[in-house]
Length: 317
Image (cartoon, rainbow, N blue to C red; front, side):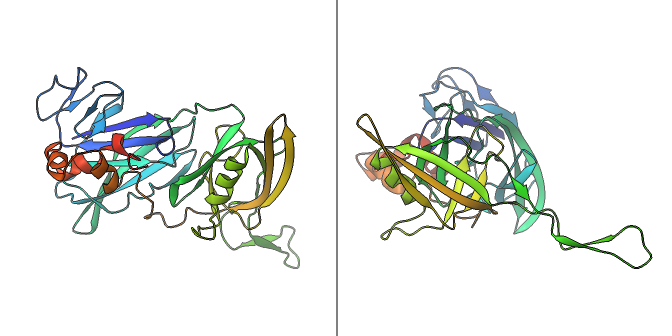
């Protein structure tokens, strides 16, 4: 099988790494029509082949254990490792595709496939490493609602934001009579960062509304959690923070542009509900992209290819 990792910095719905595994034994670097089956076509950045944009991926020939019927994707970066959101216990037939819409910017991210047969783990297989570039302003970063990547906002970091990270090691020093050295009675490993000071600003009332929407509105409540994807400073490139209190301050006008400042002290947490995420590609996207169901079905050789045609993500608006 051929595994490919493609860094796609465009907002569709947010910058991401596309992970594809196809049942092929070679990869063709030619044009989208210059390949025989079974193979994966290298194509060009805009030339979709077998249901996904071939682009210029990092590819690797992999052999999954015999009997694999379900897979879970794992990522590793900056000393952290976790499951890829939305890619937990996914069926595997002739192909598998997923977008890691939470990948860190400007750092290498490695991926592994954990394979299962009849619900039992039968091993992990590395499928490569790639880096997602940041193509926005130098002092900007991206806020996301972890469970819905369509709820996001680009914000400008302000001077003094997250200048330090405090990580507490819980425990007590017990002093025994007659002993020179105290004994550490610990209650666990060093904890995640706490009381991380955030301070940023956005231009325009629409972008301020987008910031508020990442934490939910009256009609669309959300978890009080941010995924902060920065490309500078000391924050981990994937930083999940509990936003207990959010302070919004009127920043006034610069010319005709209105500015809003936001600040909060957050605590780093584990990614909530790792198996859940709104899919970037919906069946509505597929439906509006074809004149009829028969035309849509004829465009793909399998449902796997249809379900991984990421080029159509967001077509329904």
